[in-house]
Image (tube, rainbow, N blue to C red; front, side):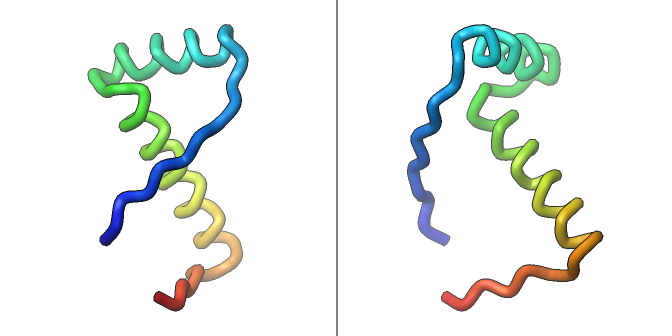
Amino acid sequence: MAIKNLSIRIDSVMLDKLHVVADYEGRSANSEILILIRDAIEAYEAKHGKIDIKE
């Protein structure tokens, strides 16, 4: 699996809050974002069915 980079624009207050949550969970901000994305995908698939990606 190739690791890709993604840039996002985020306001400073939201970024600061993300760091607080990540620190509380003992994770980096990057790891926290990946977990949030994974959870969102799992919730979507639970509601709409598995997403099939053609590689």
